[in-house]
Length: 213
Image 1 (tube, rainbow, N blue to C red):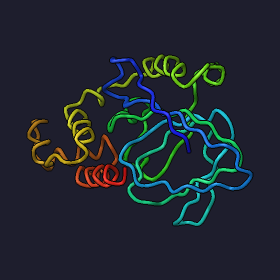
Image 2: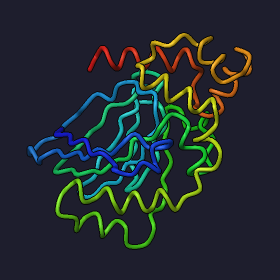
Image 3: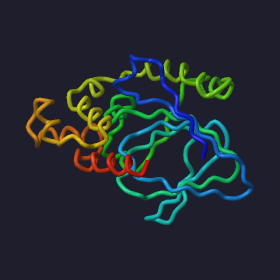
């Protein structure tokens, strides 16, 4: 899969958005299967062209990915992605605690899963007509700014979760709790409420992901 990273260019979204990713798989005339490794954060995926499926290694079932979906953290290697034909996607990588505030979902229930979501009228057509990946950032910026991120993105625990992600899972959890002004137990509970994962598990996935990268 060819990947292109795109900066949002919108500082107002920094608290809830890491950036964008353009993805493309050419038609190889056969089924393409890719491992989906564990990941700590949620993302929004918009399928611009083609279709793909997730093969669930635990249930041995095939799930068709939605045209537009909100995907939760993966706590372990559970899915393979299967693609037949050409596939083009545009994705928004969310900060650790952003999904709940933006979409009103329970991050805990989103772990190892996904839910379909709706785009504003005309946005999908605008993305498909864009001249390149970079031109897709602005219309999606407008959409995300129109959503009420609520308090979760500015929550002190959300801030520390973002710091933990930025530093690749290397910050002691007690240090994060102290910076948020909470007891360790309260911090751990709030962290899971916002991200879906407990902080130690989140940090471990960050470290493994960085090592693999």
